[in-house]
Image 1 (cartoon, rainbow, N blue to C red):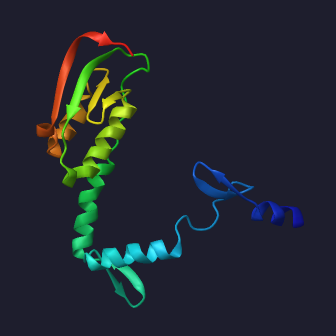
Image 2 (image 1 turned 45 degrees about the horizontal axis):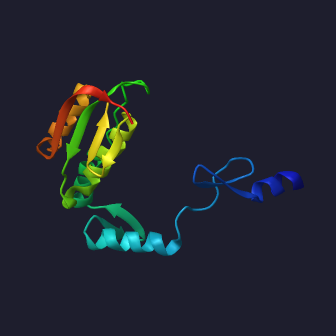
Image 3 (image 1 turned 90 degrees about the vertical axis):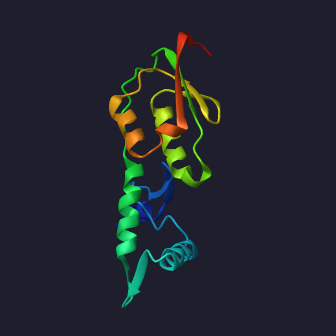
Length: 155
């Protein structure tokens, strides 16, 4: 029992999370002050309310988080790692939509694109139809330009 207790109390880091020697997550990832300030910020925005010591989503909060789920949509890359890089992908997404910009960059990386400049990327083509349809659905298509290269780009 002493050995198990000792293994239980040893803290390690695995993939950015604190775990014990047995691989079980330990503690809370965020400081208490950070959790409280986040709750306070959400309450001031009217997204949550404290009812008898329990935080609950307001109607506005439910709508907000429902809208935010859009950005969690994940697409699988149809490309092989050695696919020819023959698509120039440029975008100019306003600062007010920085979450969408972050979402787009993460997908470009997943699709095997690499960055030439912050908003200029090169990668394989054609992009998946469901990905392009989703970009249209979230109204990003007006912020994006693509150009098919005559010859594949080599680093």
